[in-house]
Image (cartoon, rainbow over all chains, first blue to last red; front, side, top):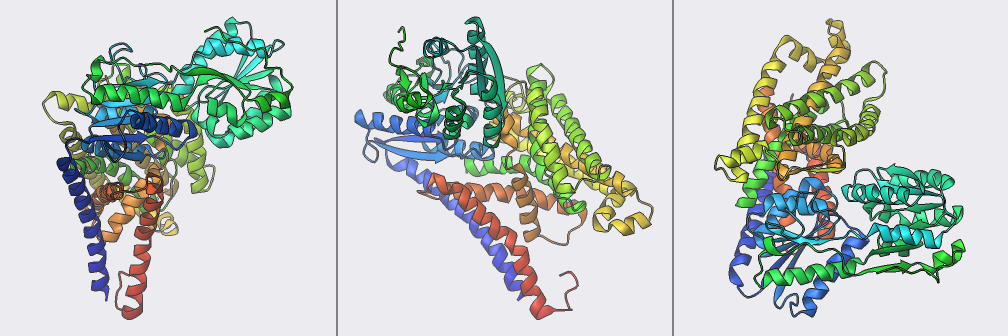
Amino acid sequence: MKKIVKTALLGSVTALSALALVACGNSDSKGANSKDTVKVGILQYVEHDSLTAARKGFIAELEDNGYKEGDKITVDYQNAQGDQANLQTISEQLTGDNDIVLAIATPAAQSLATVSTETPILFTAVTDPLSADLVDSIKKPGGLLTGTSDQAPIDKQVDLLGQALPDAKTVGILYTTSERNSEVQVEEAQKLLEKAGYKVVLKGISTTNDVQDATTSLMKDVDAVFVPTDNTVASTMTMIGELSVEYKVPVIGGSTDMVDAGGLLTYGTNYEALGRQTAKIAIKIIEGADPAEVAVEYPETVNLHVNEEMAKKLGIDVSELSVDE
Amino acid sequence: MDLILSSLSQGLLWSIMAIGVYLTYRILDIADLTAEGAYPLGAAICATGIVSGLNPLLATFLAFLGGMGAGLVSGLLHTKMKIPALLTGIVTLTGLYSINLKVLGKANVALLRQTTLVTQLQDLGLSKTNAVLLIGGVFVLVVIALLTLLLKTQVGLALRSTGDNIPMSEANGINVDQMKIYGYMLSNGLIALCGALLTQNNGYADLNSGTGTIVIGLASVIIAEVILRNLTIGWRLASVVLGSILYRMIILAILEIPGMDADLVKLFSAILLAVVLFVPEVQKKIKIRPLAGTDKTA
């Protein structure tokens, strides 16, 4: 009896390893049979509305340009679900099996960058590709990576804040200390807000569980809250919106999705459009352009996005707002 | 094949974490969550060291020392302040978040353009996977050799007896608290070393990279125990390495299932882990019933 169990155990372990082998074999043979379909891999770092919107926009734009999934391209989508330990394995799998890989968010792009030796990598929803070491320069990336940054112009946000809330004196900034993309924006926002004469209060959080306490304590002291395009803050925007109404402190900034969930307004990146913009770069590369020579792009579709319902609840007139293009 | 070799190389690096977890979890009989803070601490110290121009080997060694520091804190909290082991880990882990942020300076530091142990070997003409295999192999061998020697010394034996039976160890004049602190330090030093090596493999250090690492360590230890039992100490450490490699293979197998829904990967990993963790219990049950009394190892 004991022996049988041991054998069964050993058997199951062997079977698992065999499964890994067979599965790898499968993907290899997939690579051989189709020459005229383009294999596109997608690595999304974590499940998140903005990132998902970028992914969907990317696929939709490819389809609009004749690269229909199942017809001229195959899409191999993986989501690391925020688990950095598995990023490398997924990256190797995707670069090995595909002709071009899309990285959504900074850790995904960094992981693909270390792994890829010849597969071109496109990135999107990366705020600062330079400080993440993804490219040599914005104009000439110089390697296998190029793509789109999601950084929206923060000076316009500060300007809008002044128009919507002429009496505001103190502005709080809520951001996640573990997100590099947020820090980049926060540094810039703090500089610009202080230059415009506001007193700035910074409040860093580390997980979604901190958000309620941090927001409450921040909103007691400030006239408005600025948020960067921050993954953790984005996930909790609904709660921040409720607090915003309760304390009558409007929230400004972030992505359009974030404003819809609980912000007042933003001059921000539309991620669906950003995904489409990235797909246009992808098509250039699929059709033979060298990623080293294709410049990194900033969002084309940046628009003033107002949450009217929020404006009504907060009693703020948003009809006169305007942005100098 | 490339994927399997790469999983093998990562398994080797992760096995250093698993050996660290093994020291507290099995030898000292403590479930220590400090690991999830010590891992990014190692990554942070190493990355910051490398970026500021230190030799990568020296930076890696400093990471090991930093991890020992974190272990010392946990050890003192647990033995001197009598905080229960599980809470001790959580307290240190919480504090380490800020420390790690300060060490790293920002949430994510890129090493893509820096000289690391991996790039040094690549410059000698090795492929990335081979470079990592070599680094992993050398570090694992050194760690196992030194630990085996250490655990056979007077102090090592005292450490092991502390985990087995505290009253008996005290009765034999062993300073149990001191042994626990040593265990904590050694364990977290190794975990930080693992963080340092993996950050050089990954090309970046990230503040969030510790999340879930304890699971990897524990799973590796238990997979090792499921496959191989009743080994001498040196071989037991080696079996943990095998467990760690098998764990990476299992993850790879799940990721490679054709048409796998990306949203379900975590669920599958959890189910598989539950099955693996259940195996010792099944073994025990099946053994005890028909062979009660005859099998002394059961």
